[in-house]
Image 1 (cartoon, rainbow, N blue to C red):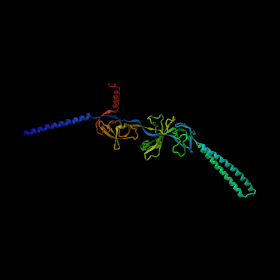
Image 2: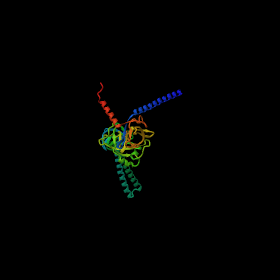
Image 3: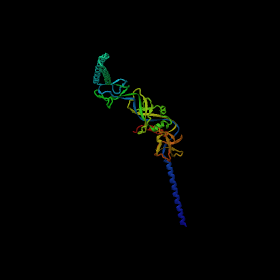
Image 4: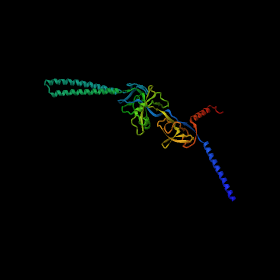
Length: 399
């Protein structure tokens, strides 16, 4: 009986030790979890007004880009302009060899003179035959032959005059002039080169760059957002669009703002985008046809929630923000955002409300649904880091 009692006491003591160890272990793990909660920057969202900017690659073109080609074939004898030169309408650009064309004019003039003489002779003969016919000296047949000769002579004269006009036009075509005012492009052919209307390469290009057309593309989503999903007419949407800016190839912004003027009525099936044209004034001629840039379109949103894109995560075509509740636990919350964004921020259209706290760092890595964190104000953390960096820069270099 004593042995049984001793054994029971031993088992009771052992179970007490094990239970105590388990409680101690669980408590230690809980304390360790609390102590090891990651420190995550959070922000409190609220309604605000914001302007987002979207940029689109653009190709710049002049109001007109006219390829200059000769009307006749000939060797270039003189180039009157230089590349990049501003020219006015009617200004002489090139002169072609005129020898053969001047000879053609001289020949045509001689043919006209001969034809005029033939007409005069035929006229005298016809008049004489007419008088003889009226006196019944000759037959009607003889008079008619003379009259036919007169008509043939007149036709020959008309043909000679037409040939003279053509010859003069061809001679005039040897002087190539500017069809409009603009800037001269490259000149690949110089004196001595053969110029022809059928040449693939034009003599040069004249670009009217008093205004510059910037061509870029908008996707179907962009057009739907612009028209409020079709609730506004596209032409109305264009007139209500704000002025746009042009970012140049070196990253600088062009001094004058432009205006979107047209959107293509057909969407390219291969790209899913429509061509758009914006017009920028170019009084100084700084912008050149053929250049590239980026058109920047601003859009203003009123009373909306704006969050950083890095504070969201996309899973299975759904976008989530990570709301921090009162217990400092993360709750993955599905949200919808505007398709228009500036590449850094999202405009939230549903899923969040003013006053919500969201994690703005570590999303998808240390911040996941159900994780407990130690929230830190994002602005305060950024200010502290900036202050720390400035202090490190001010410290003298270690000797």
